[in-house]
Image (cartoon, rainbow, N blue to C red; front, side, top):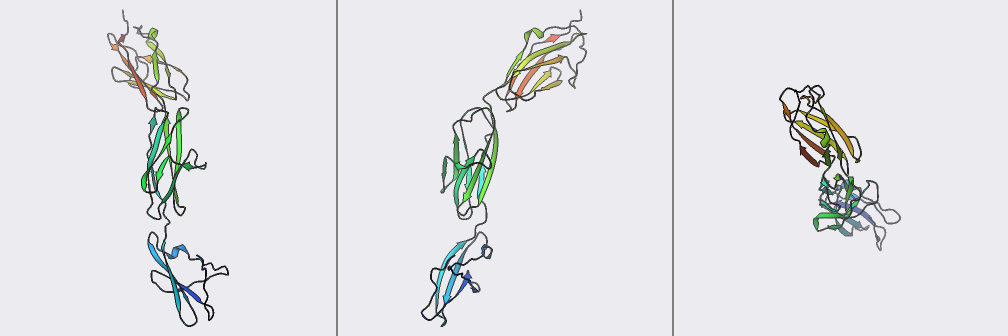
Length: 272
């Protein structure tokens, strides 16, 4: 604080202060009329009365009082994560409130230590806020940082990640590889898988419940795959049994959780 004037016709004055009417304590003022009171003297999250008293040598006094609120808590910020998106535009949002002096601003950035800009919609009177992204750009993982600041500079930052993926993957089973087969040879079924963002895996389920999983490496280019049938409960190739027919469900999943499924007709080993 600063004392603008503390003087008396008959000499110097002494200064004291009180908090909520407590014991008077001396107040030291420097040559510029400035004084400092440690914030820890005030109770956190509570409005208190701060009183300064000037007294002359005859005991005459003048008093000034101020309301002081010690606010050392961060704003409470929440952000709703969309999880996975197929559309190029999105409105991100959440809520914010502050138990102390009130929220000053909510801002966003694509980098934690980058430049933060004001969100699209925010008012101090409304805890809800939103930010509209008109173009998410290329498909993939998107990151956003949001920072709320109160009127005295306390801040809270939240980080979200979500996936932008425009649609389902595509699965092709080569028709020429689906046929009856010799028992001694088995059958190798082949095909292609592709996604505009990133492939995850192909799950092949046999009609007896056995499952085999093919995992794809990074990248969104077309991947060729093959699976030897029939297979046992561990996914290992097995010898077919006479008159046993096999059918399969192929389910392709991308990294965003989108799936596409195809079910084949029956195929069997030719023992004749």
